[in-house]
Each structure stands twice: as C-alpha cells, then as structure tokens.
Image 1 (cartoon, rainbow, N blue to C red):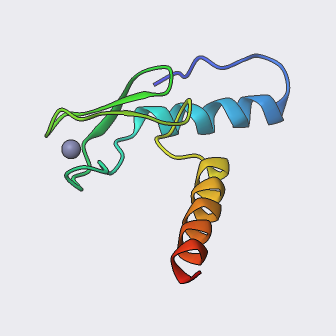
Image 2 (tube, helix red, strand yellow):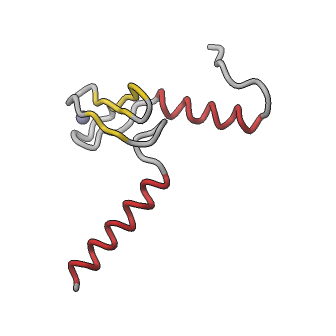
Image 3 (cartoon, rainbow, N blue to C red):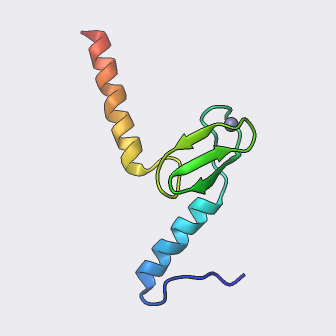
Length: 83
Ligand SMILES: [Zn+2]
C-alpha cells in the first residue's frame, strides 16, 4: 500500500504516519472494554460493538495531555475525600 504523506521533511512525514496509524487502528472501548472503538471523524470515536460514541483526541481516544489532566483531577478528588 502506498501511503499518501506530506512531501517534504522526514519529521513531518513521521508525525503524519504515526497519527494515521493511531487513527486507523482500533482502540479499547471505555464502556464495554472491547477493542472495537473506531475513529469516524475529527476526535469522534464510535464503538462497533456497543454503539457508544466517545469524544477524545484528534487521532486517538485519549491523548497524553488528557491523561495528565485526568491524573490531576483524580488526585484532587482523592485529596478532597480525605479532608
Ligand atoms: Zn463498546
């Protein structure tokens, strides 16, 4: 298969291919846990198994920044419960 990529620069091509791979692969559904979450549009993912629609990162359901934010929120929740 010939992949259509941006023409110039190794770095930008690499980034593009990584994003493409992430968006084309199936991800784990947060609702049913099956590996059947597919990207249908910009940041929109639909589970082929249970039909759940999930919003996330542009090319993958969870991004590194999103996971970091979630960690902070969870730690704040935990500290609130203790007080
Ligand atoms: Zn599902």
